[in-house]
Amino acid sequence: MAEISVGACSWTDPALVASGWYPAGKRDAEGRLRHYATRFPVVEVDSTYYALPSTRNSGLWVQRTPPGFTFDVKAFSLLTGHPTRTAALPADLRRGGGTWARPDDALRKEVWERFSGALEPLREGGRLGTLLFQFPPSLAPGARAEEVIGECAARTAGWPVAVEFRHPGWWQEERRTLTAELLARYGMTAVAVDTVQGLPASVPPVAVVTAPELAVVRFHGRNPAWGSSGPGSKEEKYRHAYTEAELAPWVPRVREMASRAASVHVLFNNCCADASVRAAETMLRMLGGGGGGGGSEGGDGTRTRTEGAGPGLSCVGASRDGEGGIRQTASPVRRAGG
Image (cartoon, rainbow, N blue to C red; front, top):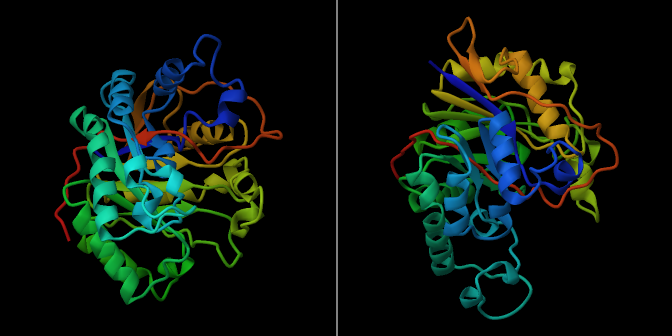
């Protein structure tokens, strides 16, 4: 039976914490995660994009969540070709000075070993869903980009990996079959995305399944600031409150993905007070998951997981600090190296 898990891309986002979604007495680090895990079965860890994770935190995440709860963990920026500040690296890896790190193969290898090593408690504890490699808009389709994906597959062999492309060319109609074949060759999950359309940076909402174990959908909101890069653009880029009309086209897409993959993760990355968890609750209801805990089975044989749904505040004047959260999943995914 295919399983659909719906959640948010962070449980520690300052805007969410300030929204009042967490009840009194459950607003410390432990209380927030324990409470979140009573409402949703999956979450994304975003803080690992900005700094390497620690074995200690991974162990605490396992302790504070029930069996079956899953985290999807975002790859550290240096591993995906994003600019990485030297200060974000461990002190012994800060070579050559300067504001920005200048990675070579040796540095990438060492960073990957530390990144993956810190996540072993999650994997051993059955909490790891997938590692999310979000590649920057600068990675345009082409021979060199395909080499980058192959190198990533070789480096991460034995780990579940999902890939999100931010360059829209990967999923344009004339290219999408080749992109799907590339990811399928390495056993990587293609991440489907929902963003505002009609901008040069808009990624087409293509929902394909490239790995039988897992499919992933990330909802980034429909803000017209999606393609901007100026000061404050991060806060604006993800500020959006989804309506049922905007989510409705995704219901059959998610169900179709669930007919081809053992599990589907649906994650909301829209930032604005408690907008992400409210959108997740709405999607759960539309998929037939209700809000009563456990889950419900659809007529198509899929099962929507939910641990309930709570009230929240409206989306007014909130901001975010870069999604800072933690996400992972517990599916026993394994893949061969490329």
